[in-house]
Structures are given as structure tokens and as C-alpha cells.
Length: 362
Image (cartoon, rainbow, N blue to C red; front, side, top):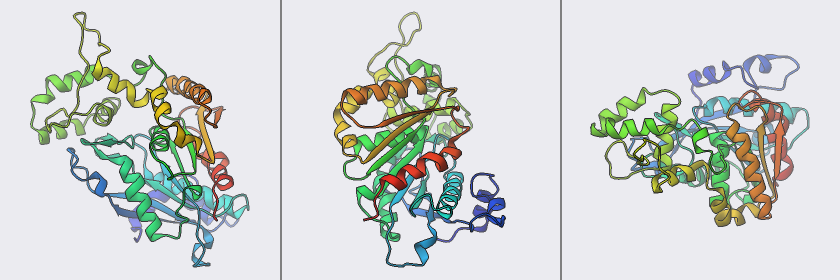
């Protein structure tokens, strides 16, 4: 459980909250204690992409952790967005916690940043035979490890979950599909779209069709080597398909693509519905899992009103309206920002204070 010097050097060079410069300032609090830990990930075993069954997390421990060896703490878990580093977020969260605790603004908490990306893109924090069971990785492997190795309060009322973008979607997905695990949720700029908005997202069915027609003829190892070099938004399309439209026959491209009509337009067939139900399908999801959201002590969804992915703005408003119809208590927060620019600021000003007020240590 020792942090390598290279990892610390990398994290502290990122210029996020809690940087080395802030730590060295005479007026700043002591440098936060946070460690990169490699945890066993048995939930990911057997995936078709060869993703390892060990993954990284970053654990922040508050200043009092080493002083009172009997005290237990609430825990906040954070899910990064697509392509974002759990190491960078570990640094940002640790820095924000250090500043807030030193200022006497929040209670002490353990904070954990969780890996959610892999060699080909993002996991979306769902279970898939192709990319692995990432939902189970978070809920079973990570939380189980942290509760065993650190002095947490291992109860839902003391456990919070936050995330941004793909991670914001992960917050909603895990909140809907787990019972008695989390007491509070904060979903930042989540991957959510309203009905009919699938085609406003970065997803490209021409990309998946190309994979069906050409990459589908390759052997798995050669196929995976090819897609490793594909950049945004192609890699987003592939990994979204691995997560929501997977095919588990062990043959490339590992997913299905909607059919086309004679004019070359995408048909809204059963396969299309699977893509739509990834970041969409919220009415059915809320009908099925809404009871889990009603049990929460606190629940926030936010978005920047100038988000370049405007479908997230519309999707968040739509999701909020559907939750109101079902009596699911939550806050919908709009702020002056885009998709990425104010995330780190809001961790300190809104997200962590929300959990400090909502989670209980007893």
C-alpha cells in the first residue's frame, strides 16, 4: 500500500487543488495524506478485452486518522469521467479536503477516487461480459477492500458516491441498482439524454458498422490492437457499445449494430433500443429502481448551463422532471460553467460540503 515516488510526482505536477505549491505555502495546511492502492478486482475476471483483475484507487485519510486509532469515518467514493485520471481526482479531492478541514468547514471523512477507465476507453461503471463487471468492481471489490483495510463506518448512512460525466452516469446507475449501499449521491454533469437525443451524442453508428464490416473479420488480438489506436469520439463509441450493446460470442467486434433501411438510415430496431437504453431509458429505470433513490438521505444532480454537450443539459432537466413525477426527492443545480471547467472548484465548494452535512459518522 505504499505510493511510488513516480506516482506522487505525477499527481503533484498536475496543478489541481492540493498541489505541491499549495502544500509548501506557509499559509496552507499540511500536505494531505493520500495513497495510490492496487486492489484485487475479481469482478473483472473473464472479460473479453483482457482487462486486468487488479485496479487502482486513491485513498485520502483525514488528519485525525492517525491520532485516534479507534475513530471511524464516513467515506465518499468518486467516479471519474471518460478518459479522466483517478490519480488526478485523488489529488484534487485530497487538496480540497485538506483546505476545508483546516478551515473548520467540514467534518473529517475518508475519500476514495476509483479507476473507471481501461486501455480502450471507459467502463461506464456497468456490468458487461465484454469489458467486465465494473458495477460489481465498485460495489463489491472497492468498497469491500476499503471497509476491510480502513476505519470506515460500513453503513449506507455513512457512505456517499459522487462522479462526473461518465462517472455522473455511474452514480445514477449504481444508485438505482443497489440497495442499502449508499446514503447520498452527487451526480455531476451526468451522461444522460432524453428520449430522441441518442443521435446528439458523440456516438457514431457508422463507426460500429465499419467495425462489423471490416474489423469483424480480424482475430480478437489483432482487432484489439487496431482499436487501441482509435481516438475520440471513435473510442467512446466502441466502449459504449462494449458496455450496452455487447455480444458475448467472443468474436470481434464484440457488439451489435442497428440495421439500416434501404435508404441507409438507422432503423430503431431492438439493437438501437439497447444503445438508447444506455444513457437513456430513464422512465423504465426509475420505475424499476426508484425505490432505492427514495431511501437516500441526500441526492444532487448538477450541470453547467454552457455545457458543450447540450444534450446533458436537456437530459438532466428531463431526468429531474421524471424523478419529480415519481416523488424522488433531489436537487437539480444549474451553475455558470461548461462541461469541465469548474469541476475541481465545485468539489470544494459544493460536493464535499454536501457529503459532510449529509453523511453520519455514528
